Structures are given as structure tokens and as C-alpha cells.
Image (cartoon, rainbow, N blue to C red; front, side):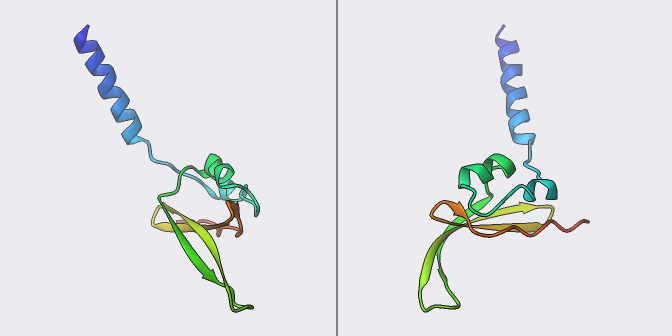
Length: 97
């Protein structure tokens, strides 16, 4: 019985570590301004990296605080920007390889 449990644990570890998040342009097309961070994550998953920055506005002499989500896939990086937890940009499409 102990050997069976060990095999199950090993299989579970392989299944979780072997899965890599992938998304396509059809997923990015679902992202719309004003979506929440959780809504975005439900469509394309957790970001690879996040950062909080102050973004300078070009038309005014002030800044706004935003959060950036970075998603890397096949050598490309998609950057999403959120203000007050809401998406404020439309992502670029992935380039076809």
C-alpha cells in the first residue's frame, strides 16, 4: 500500500510541474478595459511577474499608481496595466512564429 501512495504522490508532482500555462490571441481578445485583475487571471492565468509603478501622464504634470502584469510566452512578453484593480490597456496580440 505504501508503494501505491508513493506512486500517486510522484504522479501528482509530475502533473503539476509539467503543466505550463499557455494562451492564444483568442484569449487576449477576450480582455477588455475595466476588467478586474481576477477576471483577467481567470482568462489567461497568473502573471509571471507583477510590479507597482507610478506612471507619468503625458498631458498633465502628475502621476498615477498602476500595477503591471507581465506574461511571457514563446519568447514574447505581454504587459497588462491596471489602475485601482481594473485593466486600463488593450494587450497586443502575440506574433505568429
